Picture 1: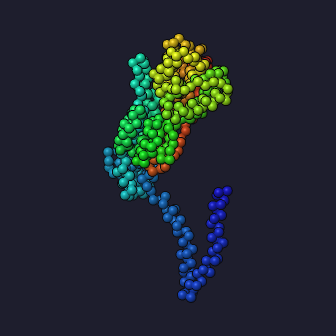
Picture 2: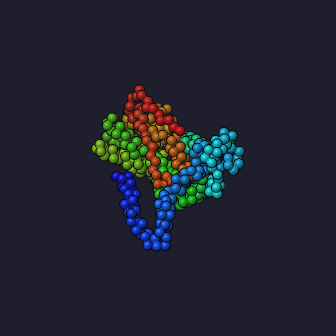
Length: 417
């Protein structure tokens, strides 16, 4: 219907055209032959505004050269400006595209080349050091498996576009220092990718007015784009599996960081599914972890030390938390899944090698990083995905830690970029 309305709009001037000569008749006494000469340019005038529009795509830009050559804008700039000795293959592709398109660099293209640093900054939340009593988990927490896999996804795509990465970790308990370090990184970068809410909303808005910003597992804003897995859908599916397939009636949720959008979304999903089934949810400050194995173990140790009765199933905010829960339960002689079922979220590689193997929700972790870079790259190149919330799908992975049999067929793992 919208198309029909648009198409009807040009028909009205055609109906009014006979009236136009009447408006011009007072000019006839000056020269009756002139209207015929003047009518020709007047008839062409409505078309003239369209002609430049038709010609605009024929005037190639640096973006067109990069697209046709299949390389980054930075690579095009290096070839055209003779910078940093680009590879011969890249040079040949760019020069062929320039020849095919008839591209002539202008001032704007040169300015873009001068502006690009070919560097993207990546900011991660620094893990809290594990207490001496939890030293067994130091390797897991320092390894940051989930974050590392995301960063690897960023790196692979960045290399394709001839960009380098600067990775910086910040202590989010010190907001002033974290903000100072992130803004300093922005001055060295063409754009930033921020993990898991490392800035408050006011700082984020100010940063996004200086450089393009993509948040990972955050919330979209009018000045930033966000990339995340579908936490709510994944946790809903997992909770339904625990209640409907296994019959658990008490579910505990061991959360991540209190301000983490992912952890909050997963809590919302668990709460809704437990309420719909008429089951009981156990959560709260005593069940708050920090996405680490040491944090998960501490929660279990404190609950048991206080005489708390554990629920039938514990859904952890991520796999690393679940690793700590499994270790603490084993240390206290509690069998999984015979006495308590345990689940995770993410499906990091170690999840399938635990004993028992961990039931979890698989996220396309590498693709989160790859998508974040592609989104940021489009913003650097003056495209505008700001305000977008890009959500990648998740998948339930059933293993023994929830009570499923060991011989279930393994689902196909999505290929990560």
